[in-house]
Image (cartoon, rainbow, N blue to C red; front, top):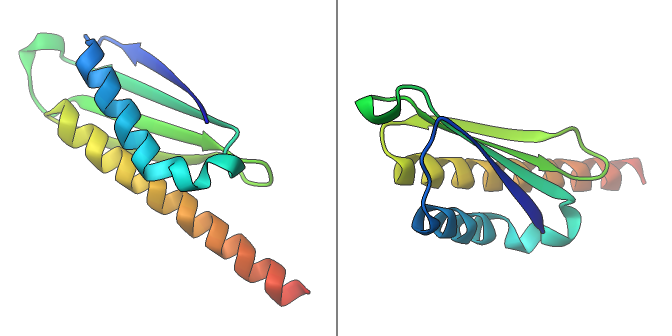
Length: 107
């Protein structure tokens, strides 16, 4: 599974990047053969001022589907990553279940 991290106004360290990678693998590894690419966009609007301004947007590309997107906003990076990766895992699971159900009905 190929994934890219894009950041805007956010200071990221190796520890946060490893945490994000671990969470992505946990949420998406079972669907990895079906996933072409994962793009993660992180942004911190206020910088070091604080507040609920840290955002994490995860976009999954799979053949036969439109891009699946999960976006979360929080005051802490860990919470933002946790909610975003959980949500994208649910979105991928639902999309694959929907496709499987509709292909079965058509046949």
